[in-house]
Image 1 (spheres, helix red, strand yellow):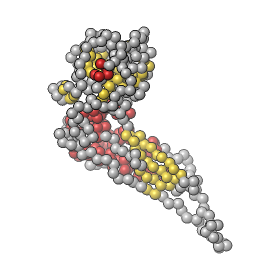
Image 2 (cartoon, rainbow, N blue to C red):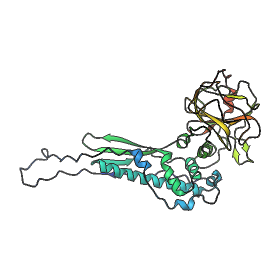
Image 3 (cartoon, one colour):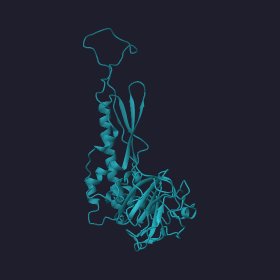
Image 4 (cartoon, helix red, strand yellow):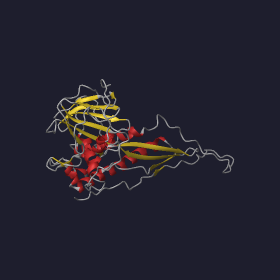
Length: 365
């Protein structure tokens, strides 16, 4: 496996604007000392100050070199970027060029509004991980579409420091979003989970920052709460984390619990229902979010769940759906996947072993 040429933002763009000096009078007058001389006030800005979010979202950028690297031969699986470091490196370079250009664009707008200011790029400026960039690229049809999506992968920020004498320092940063933020679930019942979310979380879990395959990525930070078992009965299950699937094409990133068709699947934590839908791989699914932002994915249900709706709150033990064999599945079972707040999968197996019995609830709320 080749290592990916992961590049980081290394250049810092610093644009400064100096205040103008005192305006001279048109007629002679008494000579003033330096202490007595005062600068003419700068003209007051007109209109509202620039909005950093609007400036970044509305910025148009062209990057022709991306066309030569962007996958165009029909091979659009994640293997394309994993096996071709030049493609992944090109995506990162394109993002860096966009970030530098958007910083200069915002600096011009702020300097036009504030007469005396300094614009700099902050130390928090970071590029999204190659895994997130690759996921976005594989979901786009053209380089232009990908460039337009860069702004959806980051949160722009500007910190302000004024010296009390009319000078203002602005420090600009683009903060990478997590996969859950960059590729949010739909709140429309029946919609599939975005392919970008699957791709980015899988790549973050299976491959490290340099593109090397992790031997076993199950040792990420643990969950913050003890789970309730997702069935009223303790059906058997085994640790199938990281097992080969689809003939070795991918690794398994969840736990399968075999059970009869139609068995109620229960909420394993108190939380909110983020999404209810169906997809080619997941079959019919429900996604539950816990209090700390951890997502619990329930796949292969017999039907799009009628027990919960997006936006519902549920308690441990509330039924959220009925077990089935839909999607990429060969038997009636629950595939439960857990995505931590930072966008990596967590092995559910040890937490299911330690799970408490689910309390019995009358209905989902």
